[in-house]
Length: 211
Image (tube, rainbow, N blue to C red; front, top):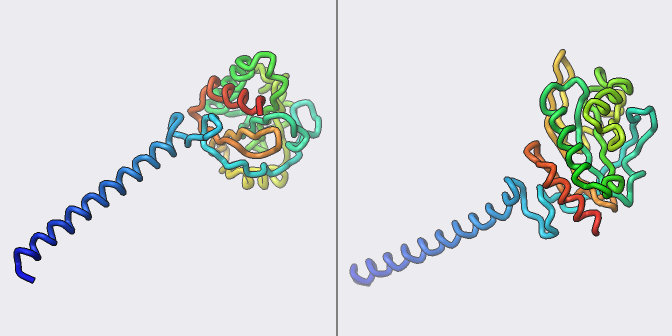
């Protein structure tokens, strides 16, 4: 093989490699766009906004709400469920979340009673039935949700099952944000981060109500 032929072959090989690399980059870009649609959360073919959880069965639990009633997740089968994790003495994110949930329920109008909202405590030391009731009243959620409290031994497995970080070892409470939307069959459908809007959540719930 002479040097001219070898040179031409090397140019052709390089051109093919460039084409393959460009196609690879385009594929990665398309996947990236698909994974981070809807405000940074993954696209869902059903039209739901948020991170698609693939209809994983939601782990059941049983705790006590702000009125002292025993409440389990499984008792709400047949309704979409909003599940989040808060604490009553929070000064920033938790009150904001409660306000957004209140607006969401208002946006649902007559459909609001067809949806269950559960707020699980991430502060077993500070949250009591009394403080849960006061927090619920302060944010006009008393008739809309169940603020669930319990002991550390009762709460920590729930945090673990729903990948929630909660540290109450010192005077302050540190925790991660989580909001799950669960369908009528008790399957985890959508995860929303703390940038969710009431309009987005209400739209998701209307879709699930129609399924």
